[in-house]
Image (cartoon, rainbow, N blue to C red; front, side):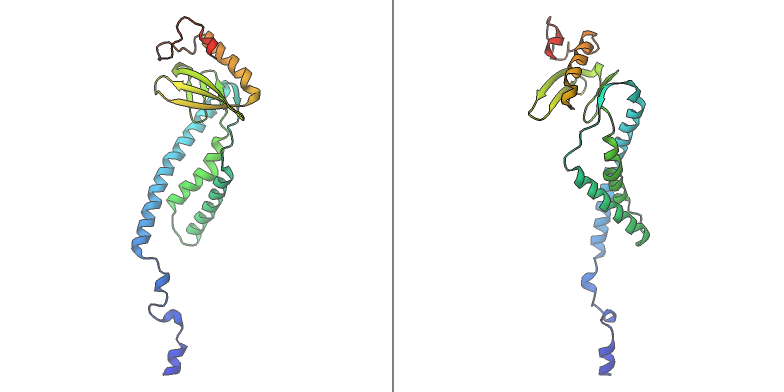
Length: 208
């Protein structure tokens, strides 16, 4: 009888692997967290997809544009996308689960974020595509330049939303961008009057 007891595998003894089991309550909490993250990334994915569709429709009206600046830590973001892709495949093929949250995060990091960098930033016939959104000329309430050591930034203030948007302008496009803005102001496509930034009788083009 003693020899038989010694021959029983450890895995069959009760409580041997209990310390390696994740409690159901923690699994439920993790599932809820991933679901909430998935919903948040679903909203972010929808916003990026809508922006890219708008760009596709508007790119024929481009006047002076350039590729979006490569964001910092883009390599880390791409690495996160690769790891999420592996996790998604593992959960679907091995665990037979539908990882909604992980799929939404994978789409964001591995596909839509790199795709959004293809949106041409700069000037179109009907507005300015800043680093984060498009502003029609009729909504521009103020413009200023910030010249740093490594980059030149155009600050565009929306008269409707009272928000400032940034547009990083490459050095070789700086002169053309200033001339284009002066022309738009001369044509009164951009007007500062009534925005709190009224320049009085002075030529508004002198501020560009």
